Image 1 (cartoon, rainbow, N blue to C red):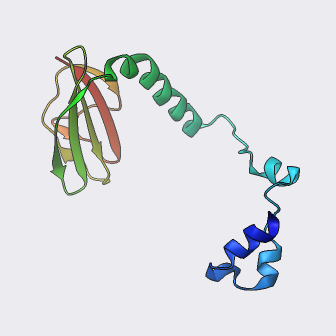
Image 2: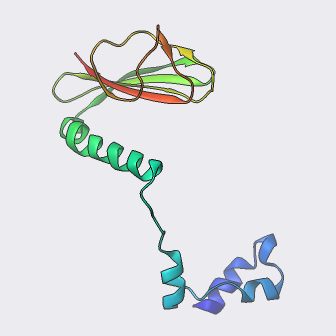
Length: 134
């Protein structure tokens, strides 16, 4: 297995040198497995992922079967808004801004499920907001 893995890596410029390939760990070694386990500590990212997965499981997943796209539009060169008609007839709208500057976004009336929402018709920079509405 190790010889095959090292041969496979020889196609990459960084591993053309046989000495570099020798440093590739044995994929079947227990130490390689242990070293691959992420060392996760509670921080802002893990809290964010936990919150997003909980929101998906509890609020979105029950509505997803049979949902259909209700369209998408660019808000700016770096921002987009998309919506889906959920199986209970409600709309789920997401707006994401990948730029640091705020982007104009048509007001969404409804329950803000995630994110900062809008500020005076503007989606804040580097933000995503999610609404459920009629």
